[in-house]
Image (cartoon, rainbow, N blue to C red):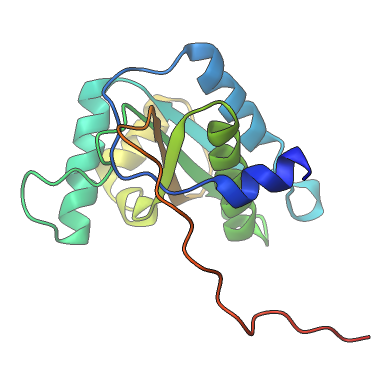
Length: 175
């Protein structure tokens, strides 16, 4: 089977990561894959913030936990040492879709490099808060950006889960 299609079929969301930091080279390849995602009218509306700083990562996890309403001590990033935040420029008509494709490419790239990943929501709510808007400002980011999601990445702690059976009745041919 085609290598890319096989990766699509094998990739799973991981909910338990080792604390070990992946190699910078691997993280850069994941970012590059995200930057090459398809985008509406070629606008490349998606942006990636790579969080490898543990203090910032933990602060992000805590606000994400609070937004979701989970109990204290829960880590919504499941211990992943790296969190890629994907935002998109709201001036692009297809910004939500563009950011989603960035996340998809990144998860496939992580899998191809032997790393686990999971898409975590609530980036939108995070980046509506002044503290996280200030992070963008501190990074020199200007414009009107919306958080699309997080791609938590790291080494899998344990075995990757098996694929759930695919639901029937989701394909229709018009011939």
